[in-house]
Length: 150
Image (cartoon, rainbow, N blue to C red; front, side):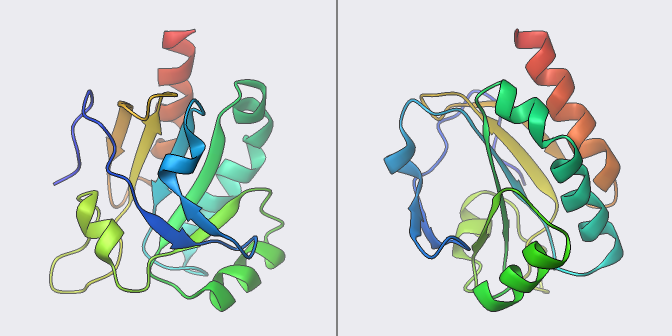
């Protein structure tokens, strides 16, 4: 089950496509959008990533950094990012531990499920959308939440 709105996002560290180790606590005072998704190069995940790409300016203008997380390897993430010209970083949760920590794992399959979190600068969850099959709704729900809070 996804984490609840109003709770503090758990800290984590994962390898990033920029070659660094992303650690949530190193991004204090930065609002973030973190979206978990099942697999690179699948139709729904590709459409979702491209939707975040196509709306990236909206998030940049709101000073919100976007990060995608799945259990795919960094190598696969790099290919996916390059092929679809994604302007945000992807994080590799190969073990699935972070996905599990965030209530974003598909039971018995062990891959990330589709859950999107909006974190304020204190990394409290101010928006959450959990819908495995509604990839097109994740971006709309986050934009709606940001516009509501503006």
